[in-house]
Image (cartoon, rainbow, N blue to C red; front, side):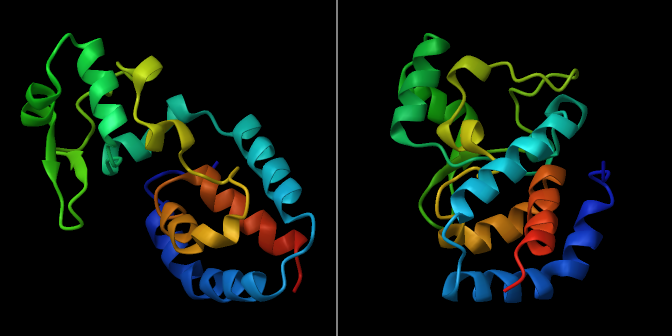
Length: 163
């Protein structure tokens, strides 16, 4: 597995190539792209254990929807406004995000303290099993800087899909 420390420089080296790859893929994607990406996603997560990494939780924060806020606040027996005041801020895009990273819900053992009620963005991360992956190409490329599995999925896509 690629170490999270090595990922930013490796991803930076491949960024131009990845942008070009996704541009081509948007123009001419194989009919079975969704099944290819799902298979690559599954393979990556058979090899990579998020609990040994947790780089996403250590270096970035998810967007919190109002549903996320309500669900997590209820879990803590807090009012949504109190949860927002305690943990969140509004970013430049007017989205709710964590006030601080690493995530305050991440334990020293890399387990999520709110796993059962975590934000939707967390449960779907790194989004490499999403249908029509080409629609989130820039997000996928950004995630290669953070997540070893996302990096691996994109690298294997480039090997498998020669456009």
